[in-house]
Image 1 (spheres, helix red, strand yellow):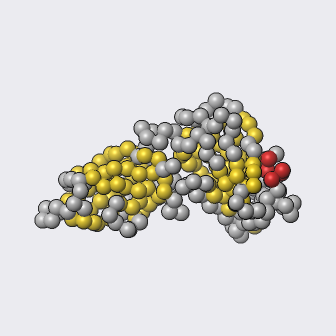
Image 2: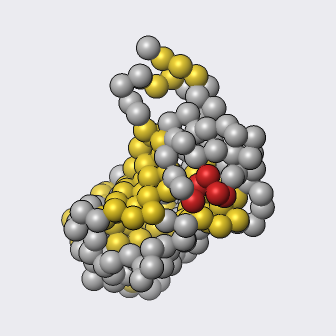
Image 3: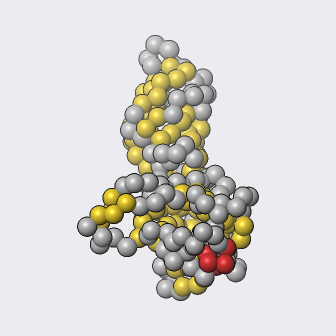
Length: 227
């Protein structure tokens, strides 16, 4: 059994932005929530911003937002406050903030209402991990080819990363935004370039310093998470 969903968008504050659209697509009756995927954050006092397509009922949201700590099993409610406009709501962190090295599940229950008393068609779920900005275990894998004729001519390929959500990258000195796995050609006189990692909405998720001084394959470098 399928049914048509109404449109709602969920975005994240700071640099990371995640959007979802319940816009005339079908979903099976067996699914009782919309999975927004997994994010990684370093800010233990992260504020999430929810943007609806119509004014939100803050009181209703305050009774229908919960955070589940998947590491220690605790569950608590989160408070909401008005955002920058009447369609925007900020979800505040728990008292004391999130815990480093813990995994969380944020749930906006489908019982949440707009000021028009309209419910969400499905509950919305976002998973996220809280980790250190640096030395967090997230890396990129890269290949570098330096021209034997003109040594500042370099072809760089970011072939893989274990940071969730990354789908594109950009190299310092180049304006090209590339898919992971595709190559970038540029002229770089320096031995190290900065790699910028983005999601599919072009939100910066992290950076990495890459040695491009010589031709090398399967280079692994650490990622620094974006603020």
